[in-house]
Image 1 (spheres, rainbow, N blue to C red):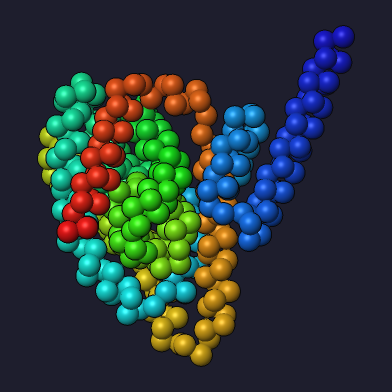
Image 2 (cartoon, helix red, strand yellow):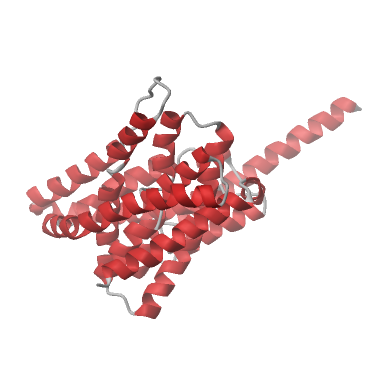
Length: 319
């Protein structure tokens, strides 16, 4: 009798897994259609998660899909406009990174958040969300729960930013270029920056992606500074975001071979659709249980730091 029950459970679990596979496959297919915007994809992912439709084997492809999509979108960018965006965004980015790190450390003490959690949240807010946290965590030798808390806080705020920033931008009548710079500085992860930029317009997408990737390069100096101030002599290697170099290579290649423009347009389109897929996978990986575990103080720190960054950077850019 026990064997029959066990066999029945195995069959039920197998059917459930097959159903989840099919649902994921259908949603990923829909991500290639025009009506599936970045915001809708993220919302669909969140809905999947709340309904308990989760598949770990799909989630492990989130980062590769995200990075490949960014590289492919590089084929659709103008080199001259990238240079202009780099010049205009560098100063604001530098000021933002330094200010957010100092503010994060001070607010961490105010909210009585563990030092390493506060530093990880500040790093994720200042640079590029989960990627920055993943790069700095081994240098800080943070414990698993400390890294998880920081990632969850940043992750949830990313989801909010994707919907909130385009709404605020349109209410304030921000130009495409101004919104792109603002999104790149004030939103954590590259996926949400690109998603918000895509929702706002093509020009905003291009500026946001370029400035965001320039901002991501700050992982290197910041990691070195953190390593320098660590009292423990043991050092770990810094994870360099290699996809950024491939993104720059794609821009250069597309501009040196303009005769292949039609092919590059296809690559760029595929990159944008890939980003929609990445946002769906990101949304489907959020759980309420994980959010509750991160603690109210960590969220209070993350929200305060994020709001201060968003308001301060917008004020600076509008001057």
